[in-house]
Length: 331
Image (cartoon, rainbow, N blue to C red; front, top):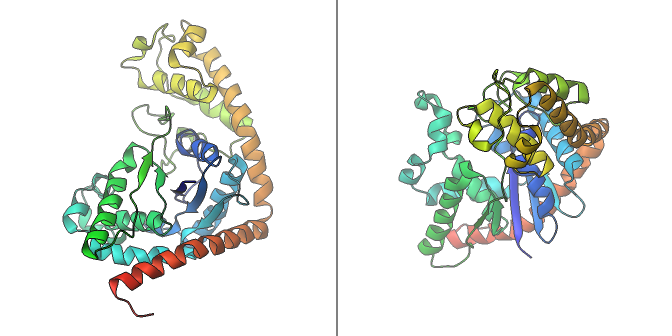
């Protein structure tokens, strides 16, 4: 049975894009796999986080994952900082990874922007920690989107160099699991930008804790253009907001964009937005209500995380201890 590692930053409430692009796939992967689901709070502090907000958002993120279908009894759900093996192996990988490799990481360039010199060293070596997250468990498969492929390639490079440098075959290769027809959900305010937890506008995203009223309001206010929906997919060219809403509808219902337009093409956005709000409410409503129920018992959530961390530590400790022995550390 393949061991799968998946991580998500506990910053902000997960949104529709997180669910359609990742979380829904994680739920499906639980069948037939040994899964570790990690709230990567060490990654979160590569940019400054308010301490109290980080604690609260870690519990909120955990609650959303459980409400969406992640089973912490059958699989392992934990927060990264509670398992010391991640940081210990990351330091070893900092010494294996090469500066030139990290300089090629496009995501650092995107996040650092023009003020690269003011970015944290943690943001720069983020990919080494990501490699440690996976290899501390000898995980051989990781669900990845397009923006993480380069980091996964680096993780394999690090594993291969470690093995070469120390004359061993200790760390396995890692396969990227690309979700079938992974949905790329864009902002409701700008169809050219991805839906994001960090967007200052709450109207740009559907949160997985939104109730029916909030969903309907956000979809009603979603940016569109004055033309009706086209009859064919070609008619969406140059209309990013219209394409986004059609593709969201398709992803939620399992239809193709062609099928959505066969049903709704030629009509105005008013009726279409009403239909989209209804199907989103049907999908998100149960997740939101279960999340609220779980958050009412924070002690229970913290106990689940502690138990998950103990199980994760039991897997990672012998692996990382052996890596430390291989490099010559005395214990």
